[in-house]
Image (cartoon, rainbow, N blue to C red; front, side, top):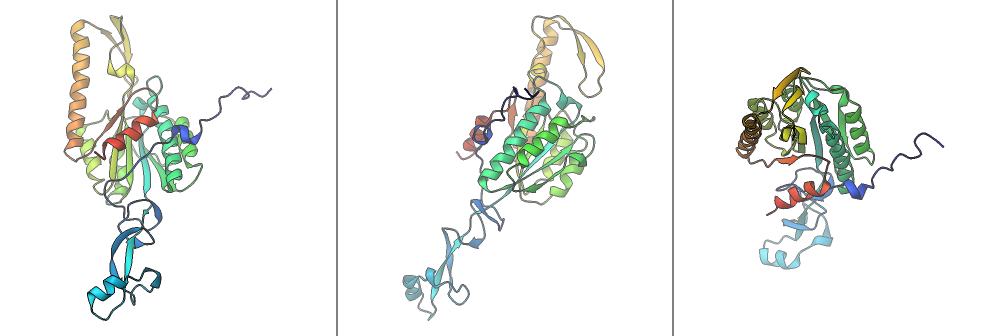
Length: 294
């Protein structure tokens, strides 16, 4: 019997994919599943045009032609549904290697699902990553492929963690400035707020979805323990702490304040974050986009 005989089978695509949508109309010319801005072979009425300019007699509108009374035959033109690009921009700094499950593994599960979801919808998907700098070794150009999700997930799981979280985000996002795409910014966001704001400002034309990954261990101090040794996620330094009731309360207050600060940065740009802890949950992603339609 082979060593991998008892390995669990990978989940079926329909078990990990999520449903997503964009606000407004997409400008891509490649046909797809999203409301588009350009004319084409869709079924959403756009306008009337002269038959001479759009020589398609199948779409001749006799009533509109007679009503116009200009001696011109008019045809109906339609909006074409468009494909979009999904990009995961993932923080792979040292703090993302912490937690149980590791935050980077949760990110890997997500990008696998993102690639499968994009393929199912006829869209393209790609990957960018950063720690203290841009991680060119983890780059995956956007493409429409059945295996792109698995390839991106495998890369993230095998990646060596870097350091100095967040400081490579600006350089990584710079090529996306002015580009129309759905960008999932995946991080624990343990980097300066001004860096977060500057990164978001580069994505002014994109549909931005911040995925804030916080592990259970960082959300609350260890229960039932007073003396603990904690390791700094970025520097690796050990620190001893006596967890008094006051310090436990400060831990919770600091986390709540950090969330308020992040929410304020996102809200100032009309961006809704999604906070995730524990395992990747496709239902949470689908509900996020469903809530955005209300």
